[in-house]
Image (tube, rainbow, N blue to C red; front, side):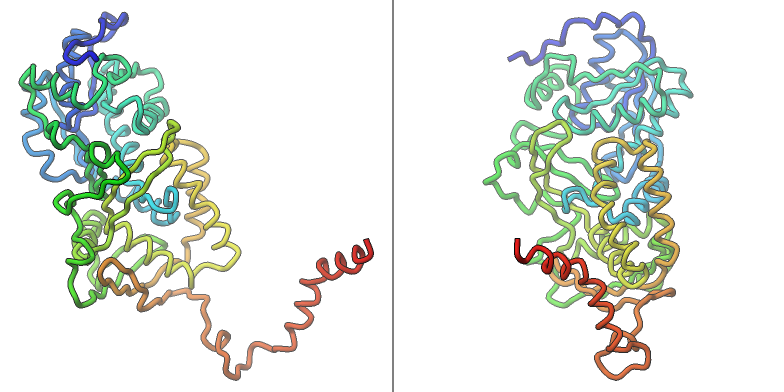
Length: 413
């Protein structure tokens, strides 16, 4: 297996003069800056989009310049990430395969959007990403680039070079004295942002393997969560969360606070074997505490604020919305059309939901909506002045007419 040798020179290397690299400082993009310089002999610009990686951004500009970049950007996109990507997903209740809160899927289009802005600003003629040829992110990045900067050349080193594994990449970095955040002893891939932390690869590829508690960054195990429940009240306005425990919070602040509260109560972990877009099954372990409580609260509020037929139809669209994000089709007419419908359903989703958090469990404690469709007077089993029980007979007769006719006419056949 080839390890340290780069692939043969790209035939189009003389065409590329300036490349903007979607840079994170992780293993793959750390070596990509050097690889681009070696293989394309062109100017390299690193561009990191801050979607809540936190301490991972420390020293990133300096590191990029030391490893091949002529210029480095760090762009704060956390607020836009929440408002333009996370909030639409909450309103849609979008979960991929009933488990995955789309933390990586939602981050890639906002990263691509900001990278496209730098490509235009720098008048670059190519863009580069570090996604592997086995993963979903290559599709998400490239479809976004095709939608936003359709004429740009896209460089995907994992589909070009002779590096075939994370061990090869680590060897490549060591040979060139490139600092990297992983070792051969612990080579699983981790991706963090405001909405989640993901863990894939390495020891997690064996489905028999559990995971060490030291791996997690945002949550404690349910066993180590407090022995007393925590009560949490979230207020929504037209489907968008606006306050926690009576205090109005800015979008980023709100997510950070809920991550802390829910994570401390053992809430937010998911272990899933998911179907990747490229055709294989892959195990992912995720932490998304704020996502888990926000989805739970939003669903409870919708249950009293949205009429039955609209709610049922909207629920049927949630998996499709999640697929669109997961499959890299964020910048598609279908997603825009679905958003128009979903936003219409959220007109009356305003109110408060109180949740009881206890050792990994989320239990509804209170639901109140400004435009609630729930009527205690109508729902009661006691005497009421609205519902006439006799009306049910005619309803059942008409509702059951097709069933009765079929039985009558086909009885002898």
